[in-house]
Length: 332
Image 1 (tube, rainbow, N blue to C red):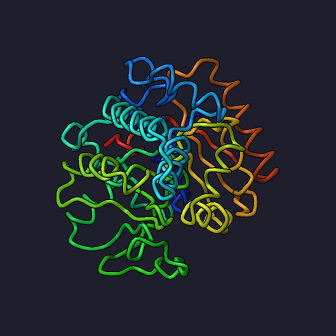
Image 2: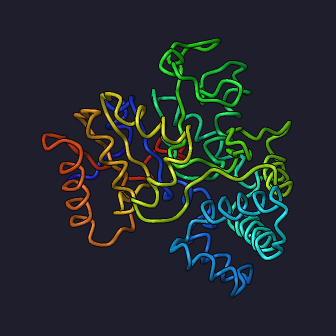
């Protein structure tokens, strides 16, 4: 098994890239946690009563629990039902989520140098799928577009709604090219109102975006839309509750693709729903990043290759490249 440098492969892989949590960890080790719920428990933000709520719904997904408590609290208020417990549980879960994210998410100033490099890497692709809920890709889009004074990166949102004719946005506008960016599991800046309207939270300055997001959650007018936990069936259920996530899942993943790059995504069993959707994309070539420290590298690559062929295409040609090689992700 040959491990390539990225610059040996990049000219053949300019269609689609999928970013997993390993991409975020390479920027900041604070993203190296097993789950937000466990992080909240470790830091003492989850009480016994709140743990019972998660156990009752048999989930570790903050977004799901928060949304259910949020709606229940508003319904009780509308019906004038006295139920302080539900409202208190919602407040506690919301506070735990905010504090857990504060623990693991860096501020813009901490990752400023990497953000520009990320934009330089991602601009080479037609389509970007960021599976992480964090703001790294979002920041890189804003920074790159701002620096060039044009619109290269597009999230396909028009007035906060995914354009139903999103493919038309592949045409360059005020730039020499175009890259469409999608968040299949949502992200921190994506929120839903009580009526179900989905919006993107904006800020006048990138270094204040995290605080703007937390402020929006605190108002109880919006609930976050991101899928951070759960097995593959639980993630599909969460996706189905969002118009944006459903469209990305059912339309953008199956779109035909000339090549696929996987960076920092372990292809775990919890994400097989994505692999199944990619089968219709008829991908002929795939390049997968490999961390230099991965144990049993040969076996790891063999397992990844077998899984990709099983779900995507048995004739798929799979190449592996060093995740830290020049030009890949944040490696200038």
